[in-house]
Length: 174
Image 1: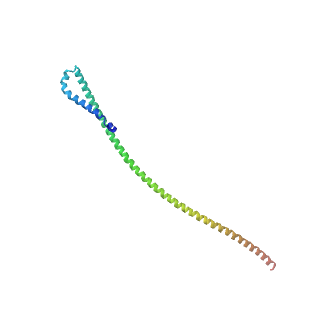
Image 2: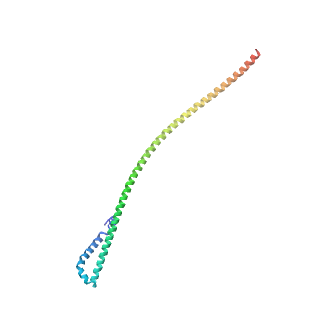
Image 3: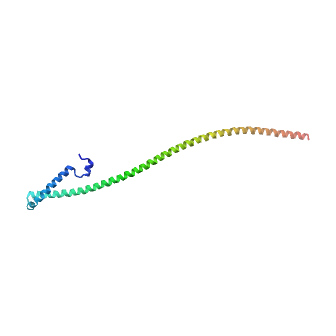
């Protein structure tokens, strides 16, 4: 059995083509010998049959030529379509390779960014720990300062009262 693609490219199936060729060969072989008889036997049935066969042979030849032109145009179209598809495949393959390279680069960039994020997260954690420690130190220093300030204010107040008492006593004993 002939594959479908071959049937599409061959407008005449093989058996039909052989039959048409056989009929044409027989017709062409009988036409010259009958030409002289045909001239005088146009009115008899055999002459009419020969005339019909000549017309049929001409029609078959004309149809064959038209089919050959159509077939040639179809083959050219197939060749053009195949060439275009080849170019499209080549273009798509190149584009695919570029996109795969971009994907690989993006994946590498993503991994680098993830590593940088981890590094920065570690740095932030360390900075937060330092900030917490510094805040605790500042809080303790603030508490110490407040306690020292209160003690100093108490001492200043005591000194101030002592000065007043001393001045009063000095004023009494000049």
